[in-house]
Image 1 (cartoon, rainbow, N blue to C red):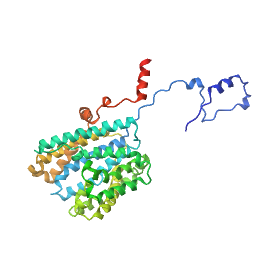
Image 2 (image 1 turned 30 degrees about the horizontal axis):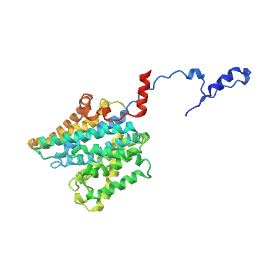
Image 3 (image 1 turned 135 degrees about the vertical axis):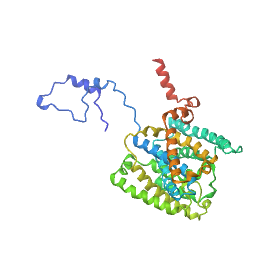
Image 4 (image 1 turned 90 degrees about the vertical axis):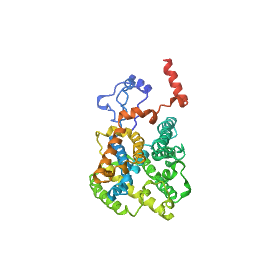
Length: 394
């Protein structure tokens, strides 16, 4: 893959040798460089910047739209069995898909200084800012002035940022252990039977969703190519239909709280052993439905591809409207929302709102909170300082 050129000294000596007879002249091998040392010294043009993968931007956008739809459907599930079936089916894979993609793009994370800085500025700082913002919003919208600000007990959507911070810090560990996915599944199963874990950093969710992040760490591009095959796309249609039928049957018989992964089995009123069984069963179901989801994600650039870069904006910002609709009693005041037309209406509104919140203008408006420049907060690396001084001296 890499070819070593001959030394310059050898090239100079070769200029004083007698030329070989024409019949013995040797042609350079295809793998040998044919330029002279002087030619190789010519500076090469810079490589083009690495472009974003349209497939993953499309997947992130579609997943975040499903997240917003799921939040819009939640108040409808008590009165509509069809809404509950859709809700349970989507909740079985939409956050696992988002977490798996997060793991996939964390594969290169290590404890290098620049990556730690990005982790702090892109995950930890937004977590703190939005946790505070959500708390003040709840105090105002829910008329709850006693709502405390607690960075150890994430409220509503901020749990994902806390989890992502913990998961990404553990990435180097998963790269050195054997059978990492099996180990993560064992940890998730143990968490599901441990009601004493508590609410600090929403550890139940951190641990129970962990296998999806670890799975993403070890996936390769060719794995996503497998689910793009025509036969998988065709098979995904009856699989999704079967999932909806099972969810329709299970709706009255099963608590949808299992899909939140935030409680132990005992807290959900089930025997302790059900936690381990449900962890494994739901992991398998989520992986199958995720494969069906990825099979239908477009690979080419679409009108919404550019929105894939702003999915975290849409995720965190739409939470104010999702929670506000409950605090202000919209679903109770407008009974027509529980009719089929109303269900379609809230679905369209949720998709539209989260789409708008992912757009570049909104990203520019809230970049100070989501991607703050914190150069002032970090000590400069010694090598970077040396390079800056060298450039200044030229």
